Amino acid sequence: MSNEKQREADICEWYERYGDAILKYILVMIQDYQQAEDLTQETFLKAYRFYDSFKHQSSRKTWLFSVARNTTIDYVRRRKPLQLIKELLLISRKDEAPLPEELVLIKENVLDIYQVLGKMKPKYKEVIILRKIKGFTIRETAEILDWSEGKVRTTLFRAMSELQTRLIKEGFLNEKTI
Image 1 (cartoon, rainbow, N blue to C red):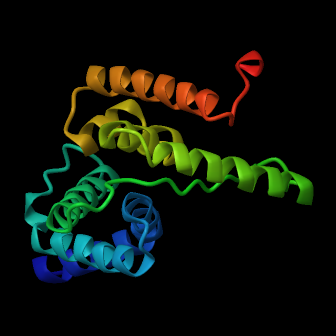
Image 2 (tube, rainbow, N blue to C red; image 1 turned 45 degrees about the horizontal axis):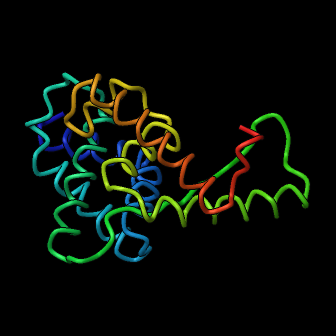
């Protein structure tokens, strides 16, 4: 298979495997579905264009998320003063489906968290999204954000503390239940 054909096959496979996750990640960042779709396409076009720069020092997934992150940041910078990140939580329990009343409560809690995350520093939002929502490891998060693992740990700790404080301050959490 020629290099060009291999590149095309790899990008198609990566799109099938990671396209939805990248779309959701970008959507969380910009809160505009159509624009998130465009930026997802742009991410994979850049991955195609810069395919040879992927040195396999990280996984394909973390490399693609880094490309998506940089593409989104470039878009946000061009579109100032858009908010950098808002939250879209997709909560699912693997053991059993939530009951209808639990779904209502989950939806209300998610909206509360969105509201509070929208007021946090961009770097806090990013690290919470990548670690707690998308489930990336510390190492993967560090690669995506181009930070040290120590910075990811420290920033995540501070971000989660701030999130908890804000949720309590705004009445979404009770101090006694923590």
